[in-house]
Length: 249
View 1: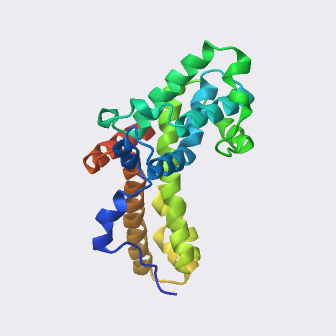
View 2: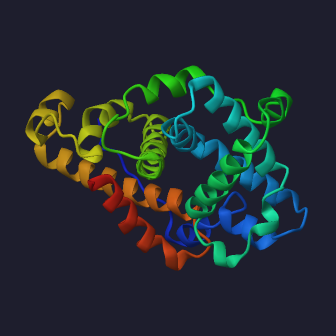
View 3: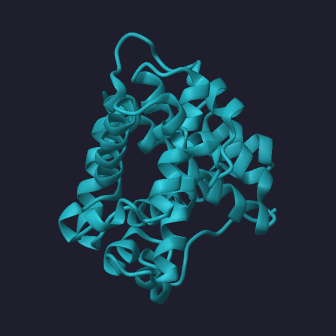
């Protein structure tokens, strides 16, 4: 069994960072009705709905109310009721989204319960049971709503990158390599390279090379995920540093 190879062609890296599914597209569209802006916003919302759900729950809302509020918030976002406020000064999608959610919740508190549900219309299909099961594991005594949002935002991006790495491994016929070596990539090492080599029937040198390539590809995928949420490629490094800080708290 040969060690896996990861990466993208050099000519593809630049163009892959900013595509029609990114926050930059939404910003560029501004107040227009460009269909690609709506598609980009919907994809971004699907990516980040759990951090928003966790924020609403930590603000004191029950599970059912949090689900309803998340649905209504997305309904407004996708209807572009909030996009009139969008401009280059809004910067990162993370910052814009949190500010928009705070404004939305403040507005909802001033309305009657019947009005604030928006008729129960669903725009995105959210798995409320999964969300609540995840929320049960959140720390209860040391994170306010903003901190839990930021931490889950960072973890969501890392989880998406790791899932993409797994999918690439499976597509390349290297699923076993990935399962044996994923702990080296995710930073939770349970076995040594020597033990992994025995399990895979490979040399320790081959395993170390494979780990190096996995980590390199994982970093590229993390950058790709972050690139979707910023307006300019110059912001990627700063956002990486910020998310590292969030995860180390």
